[in-house]
Image (cartoon, rainbow, N blue to C red):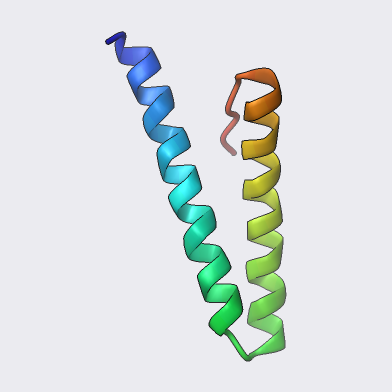
Length: 61
């Protein structure tokens, strides 16, 4: 497999894992400040993944 493609697929895999982890952390958190920060990160990561699904390009920060 092409190294660049393999690296891109790995980034997507880890992005999905990160989103799952953020969702779990958000559900378990009780502090409103931390919940707000987790929600912000979750929205950014979901937006990136959604953009990837539409365009085929995953952009990192």
